[in-house]
Image (cartoon, rainbow, N blue to C red; front, side, top):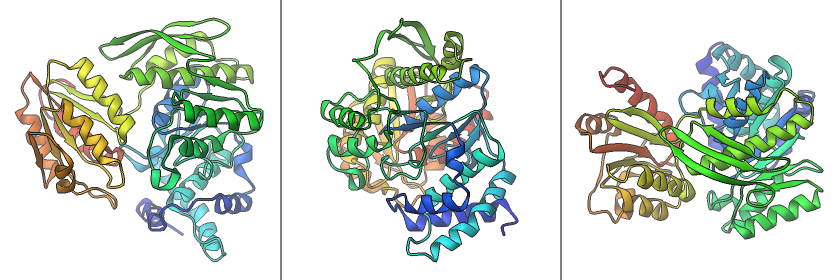
Length: 440
């Protein structure tokens, strides 16, 4: 029995030592012992390589604007662990997490004694989420973000009202496969019998795999540039404006506050899913709630402007596709700026491709490491870079603050490469910036 939040959190994190253990049998075992809470929840399931968290947020915000109470299960966290299980965007309390840990701990101990072995950290958190949403807070609907892949992900024991696959990229190739098609097959594992699937996947081979899986499951499919398109895109100072061309009529001049053309795709998927939910009984979802929900949606760590003077941006881009989107926005929006980049990443990423793209737009690129089991060493990153103005830094905390102090009006600082690094860097930066006289 845990008596403090720290004890509970330490126990949860201890599951990291088990790494990733594909398969659903451990989850099914725990759910059976909890009287199958996953079957008591109305849910939407969101998978894909990038954009999952943003799409979760757009859909949550639309539903909230319609007056619904919305649970979300996301990963990783940016500022505090409790974010992973939230109601209407507010993380569960420390006391609630302690309560959940005391519910799941006895099950985890018993499971460890079976031939299945003990649960991973992610399985523990997922079990906590199912129990919480089914038995403690009971929201109107819950949006579950896939942790990794889809087919064998811990969340994939639900029977959702709808599923979304945002896009397919070459990430986690050591687990999911080396080709777009292999990865798409794993992601398409969340498609359920006769349950609609919404997707913005563009790669033809990957899309074909998803179409085949949807056909096998008799699942209706809505595809970007097929059943719906995006038109009239305009970049705003703090967001994007666009139109969704879809039946029965287009949704015109929609605005989002998240920056990046790719966010219009994530928002469109949320809109289509919301319209479908309206048909399934969520009648308070209207064009007005769609418009206001999209505009209010905010997801930290995604092209997030922490300060305008000096200009400081953090972005959780952590794979080649994410870095491509980031560099596109930087070169488009800030072509006249001297771009200073601070980069940290996990060692198992496609570092050559990521760093190569950043080298092309950075006036200076600095490499750091951080306290995480799989974090790449700064020297390793430095050796990959072809930049003429690069350096490796030992202590990122003091270095970031020094960089900010030295920025002039022609320069900007961009911190990127890993969501795990962003989760450490953001509170450190915000604490410093908050004490300065310039505006946030």
